[in-house]
Length: 217
Image 1 (cartoon, rainbow, N blue to C red):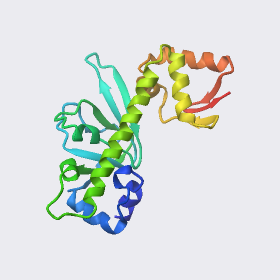
Image 2: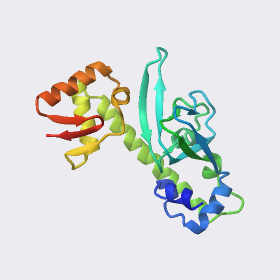
Image 3: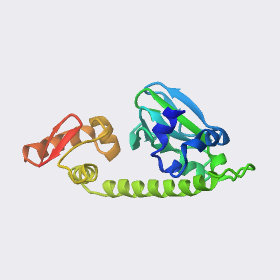
């Protein structure tokens, strides 16, 4: 229980939830811990959305695949991150995305209906959970707008620079959570063209990089 609380306490969903209430809350929410191997599907596009997932260990990708098999990475979620809450609370019966484990991962699954519906026991933490869920969804909407802003750029270079600008914050050196193929999927660009553009930017003295570590000059 200590490990679970330690790994999810920073998630906005559990803001204001004390450790002394945590065990009772998990029981009330019908929470379960599930293990997934690397590349194993956690939630498949078209599946019924029955739970909100929180990453206890490892990391997951939220992806979208078109009819031609082209993959777009919508999000990368690490420890303490959540997925499925937007679709669950919006009443989406079938998932429009696939969630896949990037590495061996443990996921805490919570029945979303237990979150958004007040329980008969009138748990003290339930009101806090409902308010936290609203804030969590609002935060996800901000990230979605950020992604839309990146994809709205006209050229691959503009997309890359805007993506780097967001991930580096105030630092000149930073690490991104994607390899080259994953970054191309995230930016919705051709991998070869993106790699060529990165090399041009390096040759022009704009950036330096080593694998997923970058520096803005």
